[in-house]
Image (cartoon, rainbow, N blue to C red; front, side, top):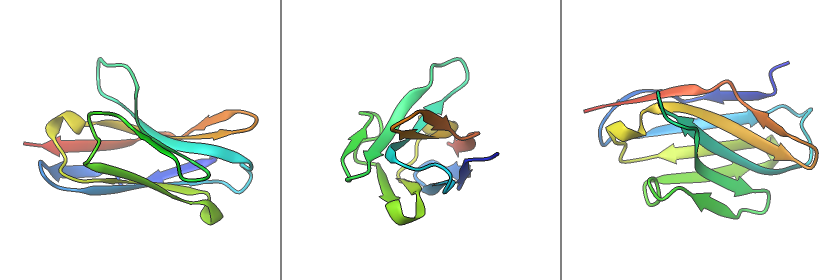
Length: 115
C-alpha cells in the first residue's frame, strides 16, 4: 500500500523554482513530524527541512533562505517550495513522516538543476 505520495520534481534551470508535495494516507494517523530529505549519487542522505505538527521548522544550512517547508494538517500533506535552485541541489528528494509509532518514507522524486 502506497502511504506517502510525492509529486513536483523535475528539470529546472539554475535560479528557477519547484514546489514539491507529499500527501500521507489517511491510514497514517498521529503524525508528529514530516520532512524532506535528499540524496545525490555517491553521497549520504541528508535532511533538507522538517516541520512539526504545531509548525516548528528546521532547515539545512545549505537551503536556508531559499527553501520553505509548510504543511496542511487537515490534508496530511507537506510541501517544499524550493527557490533560487542551484546545480548542487540536484538529488532524489524523499518525503518522511514520523508518527508516535514509526517512521514512513516515500519513493522519492528526482530534482535536476541545470547550469
